[in-house]
Structure formats: C-alpha cells, structure tokens
Image 1: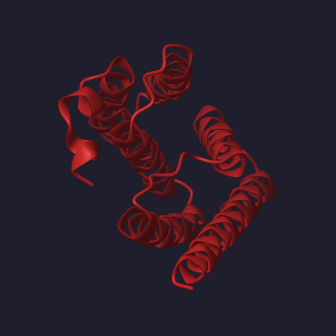
Image 2: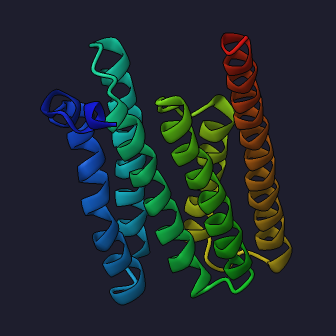
Length: 193
C-alpha cells in the first residue's frame, strides 16, 4: 500500500493531466449552471475527455503507468462524469435517476477496488467495458448539451442507453472481481496444503 504513495508513483505527467481534469470540474459547473454558456461547457468537457485519452497514451507509451495513477485517473473520470450528469439533471429531470445509478455503481466499484488493494495488494486498471461506458456517457452528455430542446423521446432514449451501459459495465466488473477473488482464494487454499 505504501508503494502507491511514493514520489515516483505520484509525480508523473499522466497524473498531472488527471489533476488538470479535476481542476476543470468547477469550471464546467460554473459555465453550465451559472453562466448558461453551454457551448463553452462542451468545449471543456471535450478537453477533459482529451486529457483522459492523452494521459492513458503517455502512460502506456512511455512506461509511466503507476498504481497511484490507476486510482487517480478513474477518480478524475468519475467525478467529471457525475458532475456533468448532475448539471444536466437540472434541465433534464429524468437524469436524476441516472445520477443515483451512477453513484451506486461507483460505490460498489470503490468497495471492490479497495478490497482488491487490501486482500491482493493490487490495483486494477480500467477494463474495456468501463472505457466503453465512459465513451457512451460522454457522447450522451455532449448531445444533451448541444441539443437542449431535443424531443422527450430522444432524451429518454439517451437515458436508457446510458442506464443500460452503467448496469452492463457494473455487472462485468462484479464478474471480474468475483473471479479475481475466487482465484486468490483457490491459490491461498493450495498454498496452505
């Protein structure tokens, strides 16, 4: 656990980009909720998404993947996503349910991730289904902002797509962690024989 918070784990360019994403969150809220500058809000959401792509590329290409980054990156992603969904819910009331679903999913994910760190001393990277869910959520959020007067059937369709993506992603993560813990239990019992 202490290795996660070593200097070489924290002070990396990918982690700096994650911090920049965190710093963009209040700006997005300010532009969307207080100034009603929706186009500008979209630009900063896209910038946030771009930094996410770039930090992952840099981490892999230049071998800067760190356990601290594996924790910080998804925190920046999830806080950005829930903030934008929250902002949108002030105009599209059906999204309040999505806010609740998102928070519930992330709480389950946090509990499973912390259990993996404690029991297995490992920090797991995001899986393809988590990344696909992120892309779907970002695309839907941008559509909600760009087309604020979309017909109700369109907003409900986007809501259903996002909700289905959240549920599917959570189900696949629960399955992943279940298999991970089961494998560790089997190894542990074999070592005790």
